[in-house]
Image (cartoon, rainbow, N blue to C red):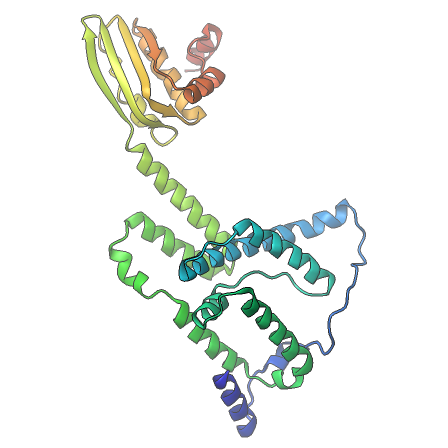
Length: 322
């Protein structure tokens, strides 16, 4: 506040030709009133506003949830995230009917508020009331505030809220975590869109996680007797580990009987089931009798639904396709 007042007085006293808040647009000089939108309530209107409303909702919810998580860590008190989201939705509907714009929680302001001692609902309410009073009753003064003064305040807010220790910890973090963090920041800054940045971060994190989990899938092989080879599958079988799964079997070994033990495995997707089909069919091509044992209920459900190795007609079509 002191810096804004000092810089504003300096700009007025020296007559500096710089952009002010008033140059950005006219500030309201009356209290908001309730207005019902004069637009047709039909499907055409919905399709026009839907892309914008969904984008605003996603970005608003993401930032509010991140803010709530950060504030929870600072105050060591859990918050009701569902309640926050519902309250934000209701408030934005009310703001729209009063001629306002949609809004959400802001990380920078919230951290400054908490560090300044504001811990309860009264601090948030007071911030809104003060802003309303200043805009409506002190609009002429606010219009003279230089934009440079506000920029300087935001720079200090950024410096105060940035976790500088995170830079030192980069060397300690896994390489994949650093890639996700840096990519998310770059995309957000480049696109000016938090939703796109978060989406890129989530996709990268998912790919790294899938690659990591896929490496923990192993297939142990042992001979039960002279005529039987047992393959014990342990781990998660899905698209990322399917090639490792099929490469763990010796299809050229001359054994009359093969047992595939899935007691320690879990099949997650259609790719895993299709890979199991290929394994069974390849063994049968070599003249081996294949038995699958130990399937969990979840694995058995997905294999029964999408598997074809026990359906002669589908197996014939699959083999003909290759």
